[in-house]
Length: 290
Image (cartoon, rainbow, N blue to C red):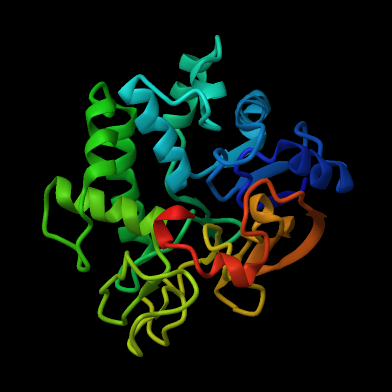
């Protein structure tokens, strides 16, 4: 059995099929980890969801910010026909797909492998145990009967720099950390408005780039979300797999093994369904756009 992890798919189903073919992926024996942002911007969000749902336990996905956006559109009940997610919301199996999606986790941890997965990042002060609690509190809301109100309020929430105390504000903040993180300070101040090309102060670094990180000894983290930064392969404690497929980069597939082992096993150059198509141009986009 092999465990593979793939970067942000964003509806690029053809490219996903290509990298899986290159490793002869077999859902009867292999497992595919998806770092989130399964949908949006690419041409085949519907086909992507149907495929991932169809392979059952062979697929482990965490939710990304674009997946939460789809849930919010479903909760709202309307979408512009030209939106790339309209095909999902107008599909005859939409309800089943949305139900499947909202039951995906925000954090996955395989204790035997020593790997954990989130879409964007973790708080530098969180242990992995605390991160799991934060993720579980959000998952409970998404899977509950009041999920529509929760995701709509989540989309409108003005995320503070620092983690709030108890209450729904902390849930919303935790969701932002798990699905939108890029830059923060060692004190846990997050910059949600910075351009994706660089920090806005000398104190800010990528969320994984501090010497003292509470979760660092708990597991190695695989993540996506950061197309402008590209692959992160040179860090002992993280693996970044968003190589910007939908922007004209590539779809990247890595094999994960015990004790932090990993290797990139397949890549597929993508068509670039959205401009900008170069990493340097991507850096000019606002964080919310990606």
